[in-house]
Picture (tube, rainbow, N blue to C red):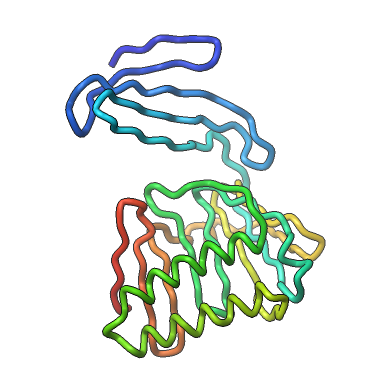
Length: 213
């Protein structure tokens, strides 16, 4: 693998997974509040193949942040979710766990709930021939809509074994996880667990699959 350095980062070259031609990989280091040192990775090939990722280079104490959502104002609390962060909404039986190509993002509670709602809507479409699961999904959508309208009644939790995720709000409570608690954090799936019915969704961006749990 060849490489060339510049003031803005450096580039390496490899073989394109599609056409096996010359794949250019650009690496750029940056420092972002709460995320710490990160490496932006972008790849491109003349055949049209492109890929981008953000690699977090720092590791902090494992952390758990929780905030109760009771009104419209709470929806504005800032959420920083790294690629290793797990998001939970216990009252809805929802866990959003990082997969192999998870993305990091900065949003607010409203944005987190909107993302979850979009996934549930997709899951419901995949369960058209399973009325019980479809009803469970529609119930979750209705509950999320009510929260987004200010009804409250749920809490949002972020757990991160690398300590790079956080909820920033007056009501947010954060604590350091024990090594045992951090070791229990799972990766790879979004799980909807609603009473006796459940949906499972693969979070990979190259496709989604749904099955009963």
